[in-house]
Figure 1 (cartoon, one colour):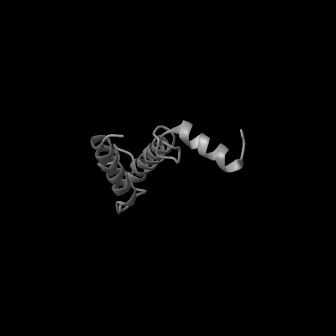
Figure 2: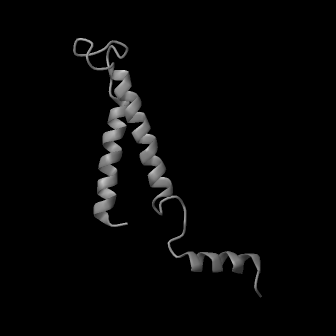
Figure 3: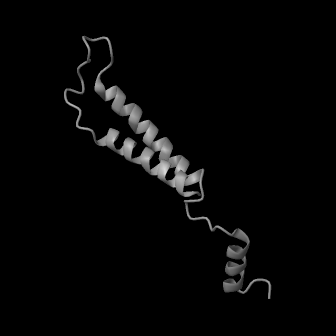
Length: 85
């Protein structure tokens, strides 16, 4: 993953983390004269986006524990187990 992509993901993470931890006041009351939903609605949307982002980072990139070079990683495991001697 390039440095630019890492920085981009960190910025997205920080924005979503702020959205989750933002101190919303009167979260159950509609805002703007009852036209728009309550802030809790937006907080729930941010939670869903946060979970989707973490899921993407875990399974869509190589940041979830997979070895960069799978062939050498598998060869090392086989060597440790004594398979293929």
